[in-house]
Length: 329
Image 1 (tube, one colour):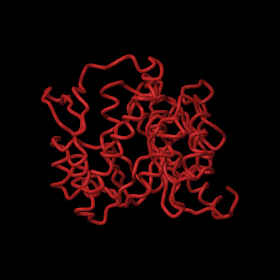
Image 2 (cartoon, rainbow, N blue to C red):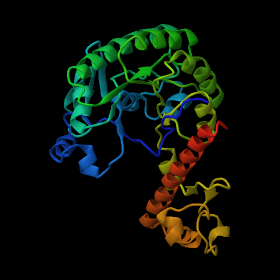
Image 3 (tube, rainbow, N blue to C red):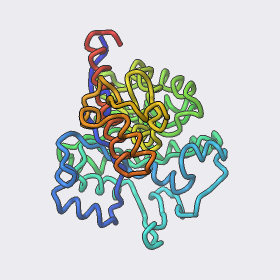
Image 4 (cartoon, rainbow, N blue to C red):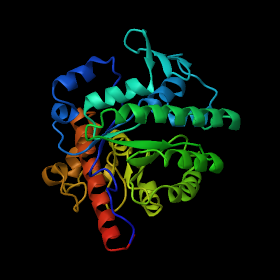
């Protein structure tokens, strides 16, 4: 039987790094940390800011893949050096230097349970020489992040981020370097490929090179199609905006398959979204009501759809954990 750790949304809340210059971070620290500020008793994992730097430079991953890495954004990222990333604040245009040390300090102030070291996320469309340079620099940044973290562990864990794109040699190099450092777990990041098949192929040769006794996290992935095959390959936890993004677009998850809430067939359906679901939406409101809210462009509809999709993910991951316990997955 393979090990059972978390297998996802039910146990972790993921949030991107809030810059150490952001007053919201100072406010959450004053409130006693993110757990107290948002009233969450479960674990919280924060990201380092590496993906946000990518977003400032290229937009979404979809945009980068579509434009083949050639389309740049508004020039918010001024410079990437050995020290870190110099970018312009979206608030007032001031230059801000984000380094491994300031990223870790910010995440520690937030009171995260699991911290991600500062890394660089290069685009999919990058030359082999540029990718190797990025991986080497990321390794140095991650080592600096770990050294900063270990000065005051504070009962917080830090996961390394395995990089290398879809280059098997670089992924192996990244695994070899980072597994020799005192990280508490391992996240697989960087470009995961252009297709679902490329991602699974990359995971098939990357995950076996990671310590079996430590948890594995897959950064930015959590769509329904990917979950089961990734769990089978050894992924324990995921983070993704997929459930909430689908909810905003009126796509609701059910055990019978995704359901488009705006479809006319839902107009007079006075049953729940999903009879198997125990969320407050399915136990209190009808499918017809949620359909009406979406048709009327009422914000409450988006809220109810989001609550339902998140509960579905929690229930789905509980199902996968039971399958693991029974040695059926």
